[in-house]
Amino acid sequence: MKRLLFEFVESWKIALAQIRANRTRSFLTALGVIIGIVAVTLMGTAIDGINTGFEKSLSMLGDDVLYVSKAPWVRDGDDIEYRNRPAIKGIYAEKLNALIESSPNTDLVLAVPASGSFHRIKRDDNEVDRVMCFGTMDTYSEITTTDFREGRFFTSEEARAGRQVVILGFDVANALFPSESPMGRTVRIRGQEWRVIGVLARQGSFLGLFSFDNQVMLPLPAFQKFFKGRGRDESEVRVKIKDKARTEFAREELRGLMRRLRGILPGDDDNFAINANEAFKSTLGPVQAGIAIAGLFITSLSLFVGAIGIMNITFVSVKERTKEIGTRKALGARRRTILAQFLIEAVAICLLGGLAGLALSWLLFQAVGAAFPDFPIAFSMNLVLIGLLVSAVTGIFAGFMPAWQASKLDPVTALRYE
Image (cartoon, rainbow, N blue to C red):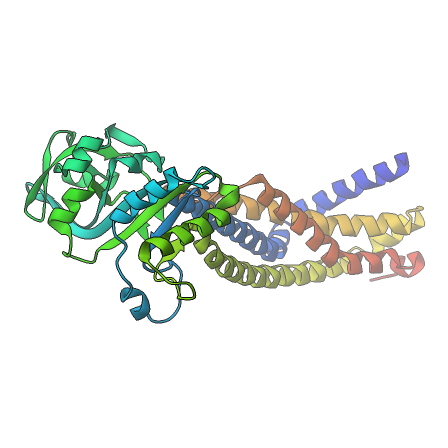
């Protein structure tokens, strides 16, 4: 055992000495491995970033909230069928709450109406176009975890009376009031003045498609008074459920209640949709698969080219050091010692290339993080371990044949080699 350890340590010393003696050749040999490791880590970082961003986006929708709307969120084909469906009315929320209160074993907690459309918001010379004006009731605060940068949500009295108060999204507040607090100030929406009572904390965007910071919240009666029928109105009812583990039971219960409220006869199709954040999860798989396939192809090609380069250089090294091999064998070196020497040399080049690739990937990660601070990426320790493992396996694969050939050399023939 002691002899094996000595041979292993000695082989590493010889390998590192050879790499130092041929720095340029070793670097060029490891270049394919460096590119392959960069591809591995960037692919893993991209997939982890997509997962992180996706989960963060879904958490904004709420994993304990069901959305009753005219159409499903994820759909194929023409939207005419969904556009011709009867509207989702705010009164449904009150009727659903009455039914929920009368059902002792319900899986539902609270229904809240919501309606929204895009409008321009002005304040003196500052304005923001295409802001989502979101009308709802005071109970909305009970089904969301939205935090406030300053201010508060509107009260039950303000909501039911349809007061002209508004809560600004983070980006809207910064655009309209870049150097002062908007609290107590007024903004104009479609010619009407609205008093600011709150500013939401930064929330981010949903899958990069819609920014939660580019919205304002208004009491639903006021929204219906001034904005109903002006712009594309997206009305829905949001229903909080008791237990995420019973989402499907809650969905079926809500479906039955909605069919009852809509007067749908047995056997007739639903003229509404019940959505949850799981609807988007099926869209993530193809994106991940596409990135993984592209990354695997680039990685495999780079590592294959790198392995061929390392194998070729190792063969050259064996030829150059044939007399050295003969001398060592004549002095009693075993085949396994020669095999380990050249195999470890190939692995050492790959590991150094892997470390260089990881360092380059980390620098790229830092650059992307600095340029796009909101982009969800993470450089995890798992990627480091995977990169080093791939490097070692590549070295073993590339170095085995030349090392095997070196170990089989006849010492007499090797000593006479010119």
